[in-house]
Image (cartoon, rainbow, N blue to C red; front, top):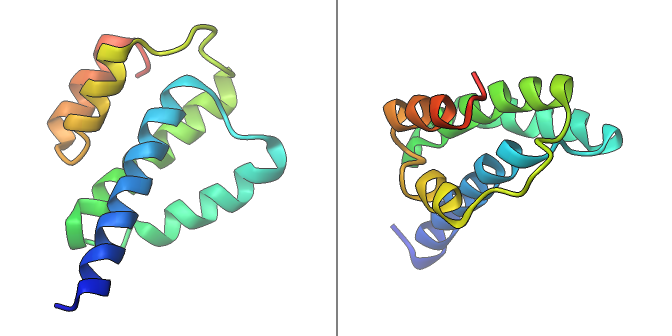
Amino acid sequence: MTGFTIFYRESVFRGMQLFCVLLITFPPSKNFETYLHSYLQQKTTQQLGRVDVMAKYCLRRLAFIAKKGPRGKPPTIAEIETASVSISDHHHFTQLALTLGIV
C-alpha cells in the first residue's frame, strides 16, 4: 500500500466517524440530506476499514433524525468519545443507541 492509500483510507474512516457523531445530535439541512444519503449509500459496499458498517449505521441514524428532528441538547464529551471509540463495532453502535434512546 502506498502512503496515499493509507492516508485516503484513514481520511474516509475519520469522516465516517464524524458523520456518526453528528447524526446523533442534529439532522443535515434538507438541501444536503439527499446528497448525504447518496454518499452514505455508496459507502455501504466499501468493506475496507469497516466503512460499510459505519455507513449503514449512519443511514439508519439519518432516517431517524430526519424524521424526529434535532435532539435538543448537545452531546456530552462522554457520548462523543464513546461514539468515536466504538464506531467500528456494530454491537457498540447498538449499545450507544440504546444509551442515548435513539432506537
